[in-house]
Picture 1 (tube, rainbow over the protein chains, first blue to last red):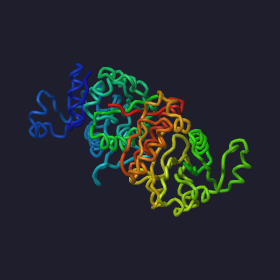
Picture 2: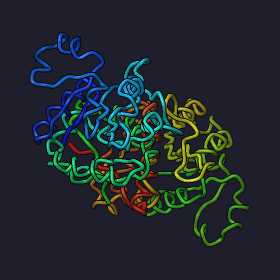
Picture 3: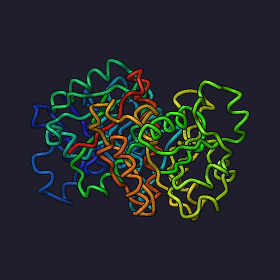
Picture 4: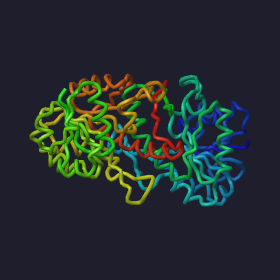
Length: 213
Length: 213
């Protein structure tokens, strides 16, 4: 699949590598491709860097992999019209580190970043996914508990969620749990308040949760 | 142990039954013991009902098992001085159902009900615990996944957390995870946003999460 990843941080680079490994043609979107490459030649060796708009324009599926703070600006830079009709996986978390660690959320409870992203790109089919695990776990779920853990997703479009679930299965995700409409992002983003404390208690990001009954 | 449970709802009644089964002397606190008994004779058969203040006064350990909305009023009714020096397990969740299901939280993100309870009873040793599972799971963790799942707790007093962990072990809890100070309640209460959506997706409250690595 032609996949555009918006964001050149750890999450964007990790997803780019993981999806390319599974045969997808990945383009990474950034504000200024030349400046990004000049900043760290090694990190972007072999990576196709384009502007947010160009990356989004030619992709079949787009992944928003920026910080929560940058997310809505990047959607605007990509251009909502270029995202229209496309599956948009929102991996961003609205973490606010202004008071240090653990972070609080910059938006929560009665709305969510996922809903704001959907509102900013109303014709995109936004699926909130992968935001509940660290980057290495996103592309290699088997690295945690042999892959036996749960990934909650949500979104308003059932077909888009099926597309995302199939893509996740390629990466090794076998317990993908549909929480319903995009407002479920209130739940999976708020889970970051727990994730960050679990991270601190365990001194490691190599974990996940399994919903058991 | 002499245990006072504040609250006569499902959680209070279930905890009362479960702890009595393990040999503890349980008193249930309510605003008006006679009125509570008159409302449902059968539900309180064999249960010692006293006022919040009387129940708290004679207990070694107190459990706050009210709705989130009622919690601070009940602490006031019990009397902070009667809670001084005692372990106070806070099971309440600040759920706001005013806009229906799923609920939002009436307090979250940069504070929590757990912290408010600690502030209202400053000399009590508040431990937030058991608020992440449904009442039947609280007293019978083995009913879910053979008991192999995680209960996050938090509180400012290490000795109090050890007391609570030992009490939880009697009930069958063997993966109790200490998240640190009482501000961890921001995490475990916010998890209810996820719990309620998992409950809706699974159509059952008989579940929990296991932290895996």
